[in-house]
Length: 71
Image 1 (cartoon, rainbow, N blue to C red):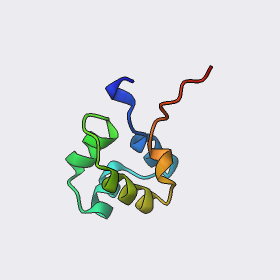
Image 2: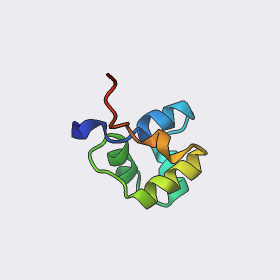
Image 3: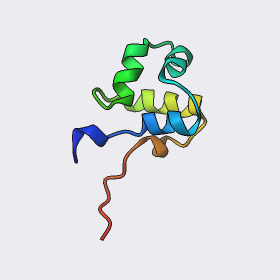
């Protein structure tokens, strides 16, 4: 799997009409950190993914890109 597609934070933010700056404020993180997560330059920890899911009111699984290959 390519490193550029490990999480769907950017998509989840768009689905919820929220910005990475808004998410950073909600989590008490720097906007740079959240931007790096959303662009898949850095991956958040599992704990941080759960926090993000809670703030966005989504299932944590929606933040992850499936590793299943469709046949």
